[in-house]
Structure formats: structure tokens, C-alpha cells
Image 1 (tube, rainbow, N blue to C red):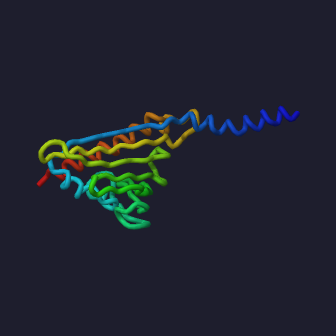
Image 2 (cartoon, rainbow, N blue to C red):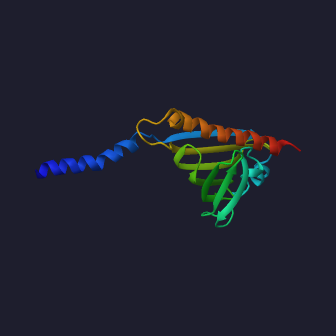
Image 3 (cartoon, rainbow, N blue to C red):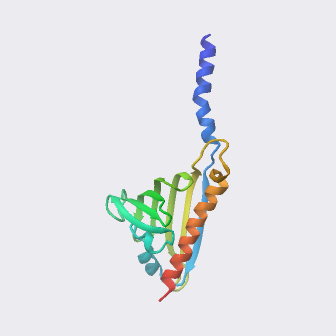
Length: 175
């Protein structure tokens, strides 16, 4: 009987982990070359409270905890459709033109999301901006709905990155 209890206990402990294993870590990375100095691009994009100034899907960006551009700062994004995303800055490197943040909560179909935004020099008066992230789909169960699967999560995040980078390029390059 003791053996049966041990096997049952191991099975109960292991089952939740099996569900988590069904959701792999996904990755998306998008880049754009902008014909401007890295400093000019960074100046436009660096403020954690300023995503709404260059991303077309963000209507409002406000710091709700901490200090802008300081690790620990939290922002509440209000999207154009009214959806909300709550994010936390975990690293900010002014000299390296890079920051890293996580999503704490929101309408995007992801969980365990960490993202890095980086600006580097590529040639004379040009900058490459790379926005990349790792995440899992929000429905981490073994059989997610079609609108909550890996392909949807990857497509949505890729679309967020690409729309933002395309508009950042337009905003920075327009005199």
C-alpha cells in the first residue's frame, strides 16, 4: 500500500509539469536599419515612458511605479483598441543603447515574456535597431485554442515588433 501511495504522489506532482512542458519557449527577433545616428535613434526610442511617441498601436504610456528609465520602473500601456499591458523595466544601459523588460500582465497572448530593445551603429550615420523577445503562449496547456497557440503568440509579438520598428524608422527619418 505504501508503494501505491508513493506512485500516486509522484504522478500528482509530475502531472502539472507535463502541462507546462507542452508550452515551449518561443523566440521572435525583428530588426530595421535606420538612416540616422545611433544616438538620434536612441534619443527617440529610449524612454520607457515614451513608447506611445513612436509605436502606432500604443495610445498611452505612463509610469505607474518607480522612475522612468530606472530598473524597477513599471509602465501601463493603453493600446489603441483600449487593451492594457503592464510591463516592468529590468535593465537599462544608456551607453550601450539597450534596455530589457518583462510583461507582468496584459492582453497579449503570451506569458513568461522578456524582451530586449537595442540600437547599434552600422556604417556611417546608420543604426540597426533590434527588438527581440522570448515567451510562452498564454494558454500553456497541451491543447490550446487556435487563437492561443504558439503560431498565434509568435505572429502577434512579431507584428508588434515590426509595426513599431517600421514606424520608428519613419518617425526618425522624417525631417
